[in-house]
Image 1: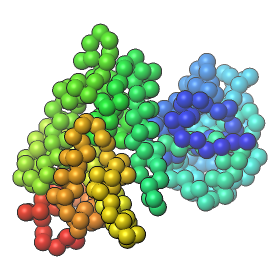
Image 2: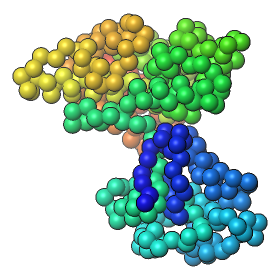
Image 3: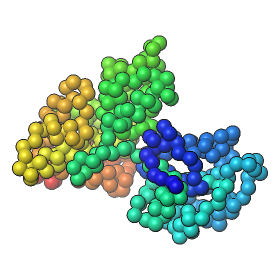
Image 4: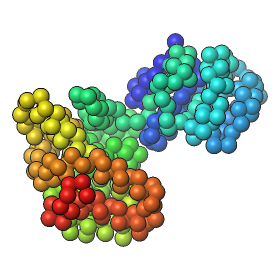
Length: 363
């Protein structure tokens, strides 16, 4: 019996291999770890023997022939076939894949690397029953009717990852600060931990103080200052810091990640607060922020977030999800050029400043 697991669980305690495995989600670093683990499990002696296909151009007959072939170099083991970027491949060959998932080759392992993987499809249910599915995105937790990023779980995993991968002791409050600075961008978090080890001294201890002093170099600090200035209502300062980052070569889509991560929590906190009001309850802003996943590290983080939410005001905070969606779509479409992408980010930041923002909350 196969099953679906989050990548954290899969890396910590890998289940037995099944003939079909799907690695799905939108977090490339976590997907890379999951795929590496699968290759190592299937071909422990030499994972380079895996057959790789590009899902944007692969034909089913080629993949099926590969799955039915006994490896010349590994005759006693599994024939491993990996289809990368397989969303189009799955869409084109859904019926064939359903048949294969129900009756797979016993001595082969088919691995599909996809971004979207809907749980209400027959293929999902077949792989969940007969195969293995690894979810590769930031873990979430339910907050009322909504799901928010499970920051506590990410912190716990980062602490373990730092110990296992970098032989470093990462303090929990330092991990929380890194997430606040960079967002749940696991590739960036891993790179930053590796860089901080160089400053950590003989005992390899990464503390909150070290993160504040050396974390992310001036770029990470400046990105944090952009967000802090914008949420404080200081639009001109936010634009000055944004200009520093762009002049240094940072790309707007990369900057939008941590900006979006921070702002989404304020939108979520507003919804929590409004939901409590509809039920006749008066919820303190600090409690709404906690439910939305705002960190309580460092000591002044919650009070600073409360000031930011008050500065934003209810009307603008309630529009935050829509503003972020509009900016994301613009960066991927009409504002994808560097000049237009800059304008999209500047417009978003100025919306945070009550003195510079348009008078209408929805503008």
